[in-house]
Image (cartoon, rainbow, N blue to C red):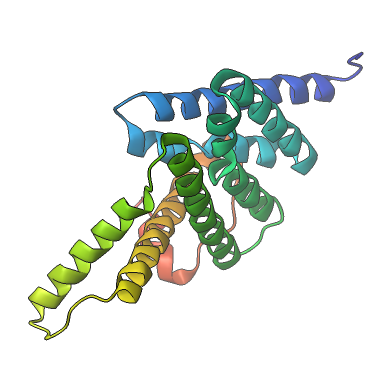
Length: 212
């Protein structure tokens, strides 16, 4: 392929660099025992940055390159798991911010993507390790419900339905916190790269106003 313009060269360089960086972060998150929370937080940012700088077509190419890299390095299961939800979430947020969509839309779609991605990871990893990992989540839900019942002295006993519902609500709450934090970090960080994302709703102004 012959490169004829500076823009084409920058597209290739930035796509390769940011896809490789994001792949490295995923490998570190998967194998290193420390820094998991920080790595999860910054994992979508390189591909979002690529989307904002180079557009949707280049972002799709970057996502494909990253998928192929991880497929080769980590295998078909572990490599593919990056897409659920981090790769798809990064593309969704990048698309929303390029199109200047509201935080309400990007947050809602991000939480749905994150929740579905979490469930897909649980199924895939349960198959990989030969154990039902959903049991761990339901145990956490059962413990939380028991504590709430004890706290309010309620004459109740957790049912299977309430435990399963509690597990799903825990996952959704986790994704709300995660996606909102990614929004806040991007809102504060991207202006340094001369990139902006839509303004947050008034309800969240105090959360993102780091100058006060």
